[in-house]
Image (cartoon, rainbow, N blue to C red; front, side):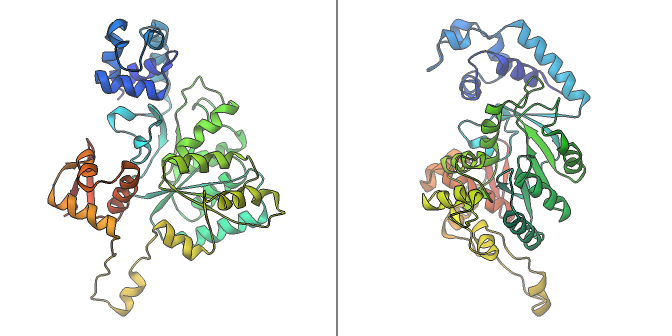
Length: 370
């Protein structure tokens, strides 16, 4: 069932000069997209940083008609409409300053699994392919969700390896759901949805796979995960932009080093040289850096009556104890109490949730998991 707020959000986002940041600024001031649509322009233009030009296209009936058609399109194609201002985006993504106002979704996004973004060149070599085969084979028992862009090369291999090892995977698209690019990956996209994964896009059904959309798409790939792995890329490759977004969001970036004479290792080597990525030395070390914890089944064979406890880091323990002492504490209050920036605390909160230590509720409230 679709809502009025989704309708007005689509219409508002269609207005000239209303990008994601202006959208969010307005909705924080007025509470909802519907209220913004019905408020006189002179009142809207009084918001700090919002002038008459920015609000001039709000109320245009053509945008509302488009939104009605878009709702019908989504209904016909089983597309979920997620709104940032209603806390419907994936946990880490919604905290990015430039997060999408609207995120369209087909399939299932399992928020209980740890997201991991893996990107790379369309011209994948046997070196990159072997790394991905080994990584997924060694990681198949960990509860994670792979994220990539459904392009050819590394992206396609990430999704295919995920499906082969029964790991849910998410593809972030650079266009609306009216098409699928590249078309040769259509069957793969259907398999992703059929195997408990999803397709995500911020673009409505008007938007074609234009070149600039791919860079815009990459910020979602970077922002949705606490970590990004760059497998292979040349200088200036699209994956470099994903790594840059991840750095800006204070996410971890890991890069697969290679020979300096190999074109599609040069981008990774340069990220490492610039201290914008950590070099991947072994898959075991990568697992540790990603916070992948070994399952306790094998240990249980030797100690059947013991319970394996995961030792929390100092910062994790501080957050856990603060939540324990202050049930239903909000994110803002938590940040104030422990004097830690939001970009630092958010990945730690996600890790504690994945470890089953805390639970989150609407309004960004947290309690200890009993």
